[in-house]
Length: 77
Image (tube, rainbow, N blue to C red; front, side):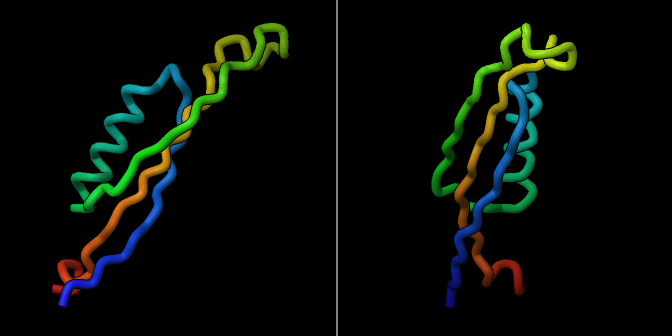
């Protein structure tokens, strides 16, 4: 009997580190042998350059939500 469970994984990064985020997501998918059901995301722009010294090089936030399914029968074997 196959038993599937849906799970959510949230990834957060900045738009200056998208390549690393892509690698992290792909590694997660490969490592966990999951079936991806959907991927969605959002982007918030970088803060204005005049909003303080700590934000001079800050990129915008990127959030990716991965909805996936795991097969519990495979994990219990």
